[in-house]
Image 1: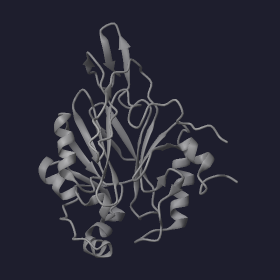
Image 2: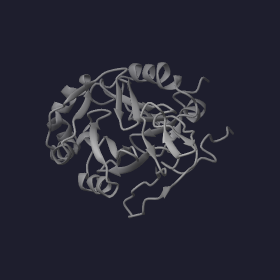
Image 3: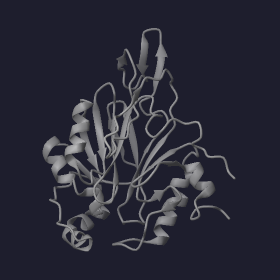
Length: 277
């Protein structure tokens, strides 16, 4: 049996030495909404606010975070249902890939399919494309266009040195590109669950951090995104997985759009869609 690459790693979201990363499942389909914040500037990115915006706003408020951008990995209703309300409350721009605009604008069709009322829509302020780099605070994420689940699906890749912190004789200091010093380091390691479990925080004196991937519904632990919905393509999703996501380092921690986290290495070894044999 292959060794679990996650063995010995901290629990979900605890491996972020220089960022706040909170993941909460929201809505009927339990979409994983991610809040990624810089502990120094308190700037944050919110990814896939599918529903329950009040909970998301509460977490942002408790962490004193200011939303710099709202990103949709794709335009299925369970990932975009809260876009308009979160934009209304925060004023943050909404980002999405151009190829999913038509899907977003057909929200009434999606809602009818799900048997629910359609959510309010909002303007998309910026159209994402392959290779775009999103920066907030000392953090950055690279946009990877991963079509297949939907035409405009994207994944966000945070490299290992995004927001890197090193120890100096004056205390902790962010790498020179940011030029910001701090006295202590904050780690967001809680997942705000429906049973009301408290978030946990920890301070880690280390300058290493493994890369992270927010994969939307392209890659799951032990599976991949479905391709039988609007604009889905098995050929395209397999190309996205093999030519893009499987090229990332094995140590990359993957945060899927639903379900538990995994790593690129674990999926390469055990995912039945991706194993070489």
